[in-house]
Length: 306
Length: 244
Ligand SMILES: Nc1ncnc2c1ncn2[C@@H]1O[C@H](COP(=O)(O)OP(=O)(O)OP(=O)(O)O)[C@@H](O)[C@H]1O
Ligand SMILES: [Mg+2]
Image (cartoon, rainbow over all chains, first blue to last red):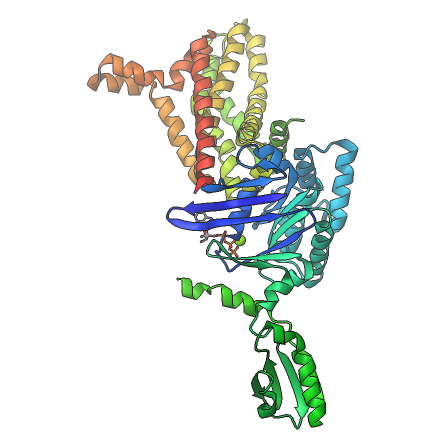
């Protein structure tokens, strides 16, 4: 549904987005990750037609955003990073405006508003003016606007920003659910959301894609992925080192596999060794790898960039 | 309904949702009344016409029209809602025209509320009502020209006050270019041809005809081109912000 090819956006001499290509199909929820200033919002603004790309192309549902912007925009629901909404309007009148702009009238309009009010938990503030809403409610109002026409493509820039833990959970569920029938791309700084909602994640840094894959694939890039942690009475690093590189701390050992093929059989080998030596096992588990470790390793921190 | 009208409707409702609109209407009517009856010596003139009324409009609008239009785009940019608006299925032109028309309608309403002046002259004497209609049409276009320029300045900045000041300066230039005391001064240094050219850019020169009851297409064309040019420039400015 979303196809991006060689997208570039420069601001003055700065290349905010530098040759990004990817696709998002129907049924996918793509998490868009990257450090601050890496170009996530800029990319999303080009998808939604707010920024014209310096070069490269964006097509949404087969419509080139530069050539037939209206057709493309009709398919998209967009939550901007600022989650801005007209402050002097009430939630209800704002949603009515959004629905009317999407061509919804009469009964269909009423139904659409009722649906998003329920989905975004806005019924208690329906008649409240937007400038008196708390940050989280403002955010949800803008999210409701993005969903009002039941779009086929959703572009959500930090949809869980400013929400309380319960609402974060609800929004993640909502995104996952929407992803079954739509193409969804959302940016986030919360790595657990990748596990909670995404079918795939893309990590960008300084305007370039540095990694992408399913959450499991990304996690496997972690240095600790596949390692086994063992806590057992009598165990020694010396004996364990026959199986792989060993780190030990206070009687807890972490054994790293030598290569990917060994990773699959490492746990079995350790269990065999444990029973042969007669060690008393207190705990043992294999590491899935940490997303934030992967993230940190493949993206340069801000402080280094400057 | 067309997206342009939905935008216009929202914008217009925005005026009436805040007390500012009512304050504006009251101030407009008070000042218009004061200028006409006191400063314009309406009764002392002893003529059955609205010269005293319309004559003040270029000055009256100088402050009031920028006040109405200053928020159109600057507020949209400051609040970030411009990103929302322009990613809805509308073209930039529909958005610009929609907002402009909403404010213009609001100004038209303010102007329409001056109808007691028309009633007064009709009670007092037998005015040329055709000339009065022409005066109203001219006044509406005058307001439209100021408003389009305000649209343009409000697209330039996130700050409403800056937009207001820029608009006043631009409109003031359009008045002064043809204002008699200024043209008299200019004649001392420049050839009459130059002075006439400068005066041709003045709203005063073009508004004069309407006041006298003459609907000249050239005058109309002048106001329409000022509006067209300023709205076009607004579009260019809005696009340039996004181009980076
Ligand atoms: N309108 C603009 N004018 C100039 N520079 C811009 C503009 N918009 C973005 N940039 C620059 O482009 C780069 C990418 O910004 P962008 O907002 O896309 O980052 P981001 O990945 O969304 O960051 P964050 O995680 O903080 O939201 C930044 O260096 C930013 O300063
Ligand atoms: Mg961002």
